[in-house]
Amino acid sequence: MAANHQMQYRERVRSAHEAVALIPSGAKIAMPIAAGQPPAILAALAERARAGVVDNVRLYYLLCTGVAGSSVLDFDLRDRIIPMSYFHGAVDRALDKRRMAEMLPAAEIVPCHFSQVPRSLVEHVGVDTLIATVSPMDADGNFSLGASTDYALAVARKPGARLILEVNPSMPYLRGNCMIPVSRVTALVENDASLPALAAAPRSEVDDAIGAIIAGLVDDGDCLQMGIGALPDAVCAGLSHHRHLGIHTEMMTSGLAALVRAGVVDNSRKQIHLGRTIFTFALGDKPLYDFLNDNPDVEAHPVDYVNNPFVIAQNDRMVSVNATLQIDLNGACNSEFVNGRQFSGSGGQVDFVRGAYGSRGGRSIIACHATAAKGTLSRIVPTLTGPVTTSRNDIHIVVTEYGWVNLKGKSVAERAKAMIRLAHPDFREPLDRAAHQAGYYAPD
Image 1 (spheres, rainbow, N blue to C red):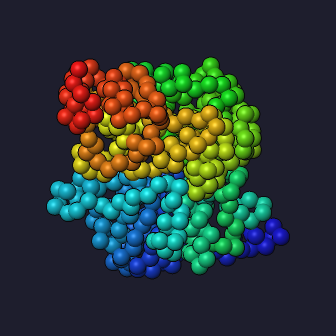
Image 2 (cartoon, rainbow, N blue to C red; image 1 turned 120 degrees about the vertical axis):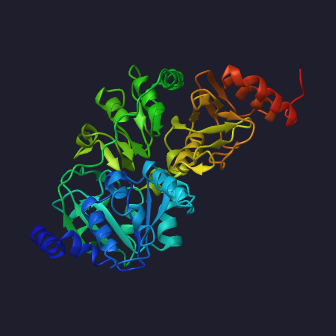
């Protein structure tokens, strides 16, 4: 059987240019998050588009890396390879800035909760091609999607889909529900390249203050989900004295891996996947990828499973920690717009807000700095200036450097007063006036 797998492997190996020649004009391509984005395939596809051989290709993804930004998302290819983002990152924001300078509309954004992206791609968009980086084939003839299982597995299992995979020994081999059999593959490209690395975001004193508050809300035996950025990193740093924590998270980070190595996380109190760390994609430094590789205590699963609120809620005492950009006096959050433009996306925030609160003893925590723009703007506002990412009905615990509040069970008036106490002192009086004008409560 192993010989048969090897024969199928050899039959499918192509150069990057030969492989992308199988992608026609008008194709709808899915590309995994971050580490799963295949550099050799992307470079060849960009070259093909630049030569005018292929056009009207739509590329669907979350969190684009610089590898894609310097190839398929080159501004000059915008009419031939059309970016369709579910979650903006720095590459997309730079692209939008360039498009605005040229008096062009912003790049396309597809609003969607992360847990729903697989169904969106397969059922509603109708993607026909997957390009992805995978680990080398195992003895059973399977490739692991490794650090980027996310929505890629759903596309890989779509009948008739083209699967063009870049086999990279740097991609960690993960167990779980993340395998693609060689028999399903259309073409294989071999490439040994470093995975995209995410350096730890520099933490400020405010980050550390908020992290300490949140760490104080976590009990031994809780199960964690952490988002991306300096705030979740600060929380991880504050958990060093905890014990028997678990992990069920969309994103596996270097901070979470450090908690496992330190013995803080052992997953011994979980109700599902006992003893296992569960995630859907990973982004961090090389030590993180080394930690994940062939680790029997870690599993990767697709996002429509990991981020399913009903699955999340099966673990007791789930604690989700996510950041927001702006929060109003009712508790509604805008976690994706800045200055009237798309900054990120909804991602999995709502998935875990709902899943954690649905868990027995669970807590959903939304955190933000009290101010932005070097203290000149309040992040706590009377009315949001962007879309509602997390609704006031869903919000549970809110944290700033000035403390925390549980908004569940509070009236609109009680919420407004509590949110004002979390604001920077310089903005409390105007927020109080705004609350009076909105009729939330009468002046004192």
